[in-house]
Structures are given as C-alpha cells and as structure tokens.
Image (cartoon, rainbow, N blue to C red; front, top):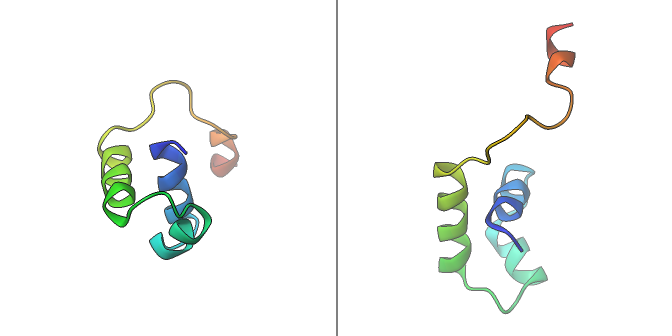
Length: 56
C-alpha cells in the first residue's frame, strides 16, 4: 500500500480504523505518517482525470 493510496482512502471517506481492519499488519502511527507524507509531498506529473471538465 502506497502513501498515496492511504491518502486516497482517507480523502474518499474511509477512516484509519477502516484501513487498519483491511491491513492488520499496519499500525495507526504508520498510517498517520503515510497520510502526512502524502499531503506534504504531492505526486508530480500530469493531473489525473479530466481537469478541463470542471471548466465546462
């Protein structure tokens, strides 16, 4: 599980408890750290989806 997938699940409405239930080998501290890292280090490159759709 990547730090960006952790952030995606949290932004999508899942809680840390939900992620822990699916991944019992992870710790709460690891998930909180992953989310913090992903927020402070956004992915580089082209934006995903269709960013022009909002302008229409």
